[in-house]
Length: 329
Image (cartoon, rainbow, N blue to C red):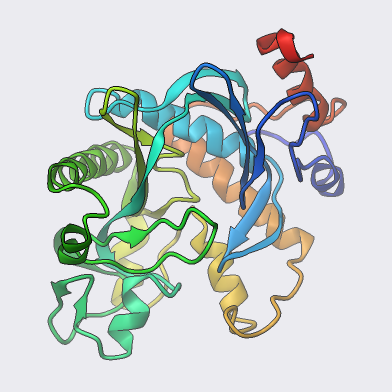
């Protein structure tokens, strides 16, 4: 892993908390990404260092935005033969210029293990005694983090107003025509193929791609395009393959390189859906950052290039945007 040149406190202070640039039109802030709607059917996505979980922004994590953008870049490149993606260019390590799609109102979550900690995850519902989840029947006697016979799709709503995701079944999607029958069949097929490619390449790097979330849109020609991010540690679970079996056998949580680390830290201290979430210590945020960097390096085979600490991330992005979009600066 890359050797740090700056102190942890300096890294936190240099985090990208927001990416609002007054020169650009159509600004919108989401939980992690800030975006701009540009002419010509384009959208600019800037991954900040904000960290969200349980529908809250919990703080900032050094290098997180860069890790997300560059990890997604690897996976977009590696899966372009399966499904077209929205990428046009990468003006900066935190920034991607994309096609502005008509986003579909369904998120496709593919899962191959009975796990999770959030309200839309499988394990909490199974642990409460539910045996039909997202339209799939589960047998009695399964354990947390157990592999399922084959991957399944567990779709959720994608609220356009930033609300909560809600579980869906295939029947509900088709009955309500959230997407057309033809679109659903294509989404299901492409999602399973994308996930299979992800699991294959992750396994070659000693990782288990446990589950993931895909978002799709439709371009001006009616083609389905994968968007947002793909197989990042924010949208996916990754476990270390060489320790999974031993830890599962004794009931320990798997060694992970993903967002679940922070979710579990929070849940050990409060009920995140009812209680105030405590402030996360600096050392915990740095451990989390190291996990994301380790995931990037392991997946891509590249060494993470830590940005120049003498240049604020926000300033670097501003300069990159001025070069990419001189008509606005």
